[in-house]
Length: 139
Ligand code: HEC
Image (cartoon, rainbow, N blue to C red; front, side):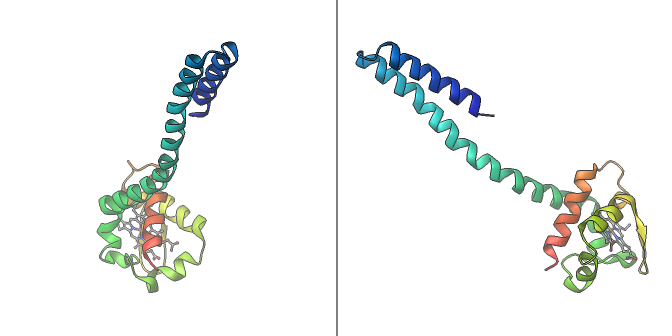
C-alpha cells in the first residue's frame, strides 16, 4: 500500500533533481523529500508481523469466550485444552476436518461438538482461529 506514495515521492524528487541539476538547494530538497519515504517503508515491515500476532490474539479471545467452557474442563467429553493426548489423534485427522467439525458441529464417540461451539455470532474465521489456538497449545 505504501509503494505508490513512495514511488510518487521518488518521482517528484527525481524531477526536482533533473530540472535544477546545478542548483544545490533543489538537490537537498529532493533528498529531504526522499527521507520520509524511507521511514514509511521501514515502518511498513513491523505491520506485517503484527497481523499474525493478531490472529493468535483473536484465537485466544474466541477460545476464552466460547470454547473454554467445554474444552477448558473436558465437559461433555471435549478434548481438554493443552492435553496432547486428547488432541494428537484429532490433529492427525488434518486441519480441514477439524475446521469442518468446529464450524458445522459433529457427534463423536465422546460427545457432541456444537456448530461454532454454540456461538452463532462467531464468524468462520473466528472459529478457525479458535481451532488454531487450541491445536497450537496441544503440543
Ligand atoms: C458445549 C461444549 C463445547 C463447546 C462450547 C465447544 N466444543 Fe469443541 N468439542 C466438544 C466435544 C464434546 C468434542 C468431542 C466430540 C467427540 O469427539 O465425541 C469437541 C471437539 C472439538 C474438536 C475436535 C473435532 C474432531 O474432529 O475431533 C474441535 C476442533 C473443536 N471441538 C473446536 C471447538 C472450538 C473452536 C470451539 C469454540 C469456538 C469449541 N470447540 C467449543 C464440545 C464443545
